[in-house]
Amino acid sequence: LLLQKQNDIKFKMLASQVNPHFLFNTLESIRMEAHLRGEEGLAQAVWQLSMLIRNSLEVGSRQIPLSDELNMVRCYLELQKFRYEDRLQYSMEIDPATEHIEIPPLIIQPLVENSIVHGLDRKEGPTLITIRTKLNDQDMLLVEIQDDGAGIPPMKMNQLKNQLTNSDESGDRIGLRNVNDRLELTYGIASRLTINSIERKGTCITFCIPKEGRT
Figure 1 (cartoon, one colour):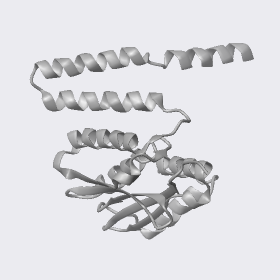
Figure 2 (cartoon, helix red, strand yellow; figure 1 turned 60 degrees about the horizontal axis):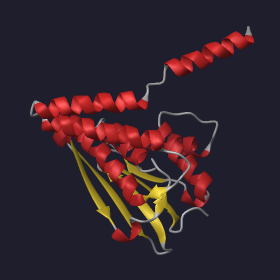
Figure 3 (cartoon, one colour; figure 1 turned 120 degrees about the vertical axis):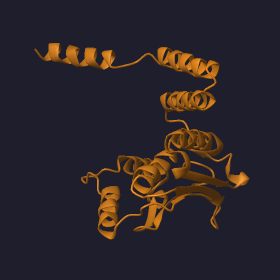
């Protein structure tokens, strides 16, 4: 009976997997059809989605240059602009001296997603998301994601801080928790996320990592 259950689980796992080649070929077919019909905005959105999925599937334990991560973030933001149009605005202020520094993949995109889900979606009117990178006074990479969205109420802010530091806490910001845990495991406690937010004013999330990579 146990063996049967294990086989059922394996079968369901296999059945739920979509062949990546089929997925990319299908997306490319949709993109070409949109291009032929003159729907350049739609064609571009499909291409950006394809790039995001491809990069997500290729993510492993390796680190990637910050410039590669930022290209993924730019793709993600452009894809979201296809949905939100003028409600979403973004700016990238990138110090060229930081672009070669290697970081864990998919470490910035979840923070940008947080700004959209909890900042833009809960605010009327446009929201500006700004991504900044620079070397701080300790010659460490400083990454900052700032938005002028809905902000976080003080009580929610306390709950969020507990969720990030207490493994027994659960919450709706799984992306932030995941990033925080990966930063701590890779670089130590000093690289944990720092979150500052004012209700109805916006949120700023920062983290620092060694310029040389893993400690």
